[in-house]
Amino acid sequence: MRLVIIVLVVIAIGFAVTIGWGLAGGPGPRDGSDGAPPTRANGEVDEDRLEDWQPPSLVEAMNGLLAPFAPALDLAQPHLAMSAGGTANRTVPAAATDLRLARLHLTAGLGARITLACVPAAGRSCPQSLCLCRPGTALDESLLDGCPKAWRKARRENGRIRCREGDADGQLLAYPEGGALQAGPLGNGGAELDIQ
Image 1 (cartoon, rainbow, N blue to C red):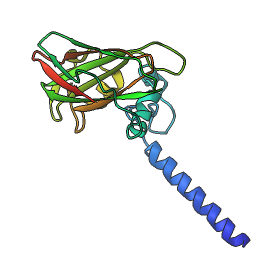
Image 2 (image 1 turned 60 degrees about the vertical axis):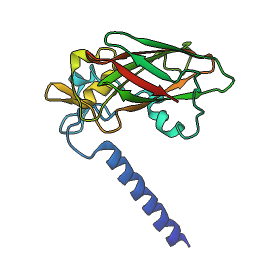
Image 3 (image 1 turned 180 degrees about the horizontal axis):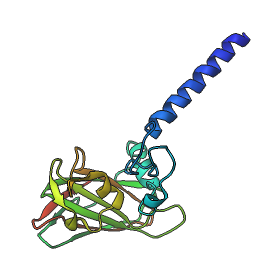
């Protein structure tokens, strides 16, 4: 019986090491775009590049896990249309539900920058910002002021920002007190969003 327990413990340790190795990306330098701090080739934290690195937001990390369980916003006007250089606003009403999820989808235009203002409190990310864009679209970084720094860094390619598959969809958390949702187009054209 002891032998079986020892074998199971060794297997569990092996799984933990394998998962840790996979999350850490193995040996070698890291640039910090995957959420882990930037490292040198020997695995030590690169202090010079650490100044520009920001750890991932807990809200962003939890959005994917919470999405299937969080209720939607259910806005009276779930469609936002923005003209070039303009913005569109929606009030997110207060609700009895602790958390609601604003599911956003870019339906027209190159991209959009969305900000959800909320009442600051401990453990909250206020305001929350999100940028949506069409997969495969390459944008000048100058058009992306206000987009999260980590989002831009992860998509930087040859001096431009290249949008990935799934970048036309995003989520923001709405707290019980509600808030204000503001969106503006990326680039010179307009954009349209659907909010669920």
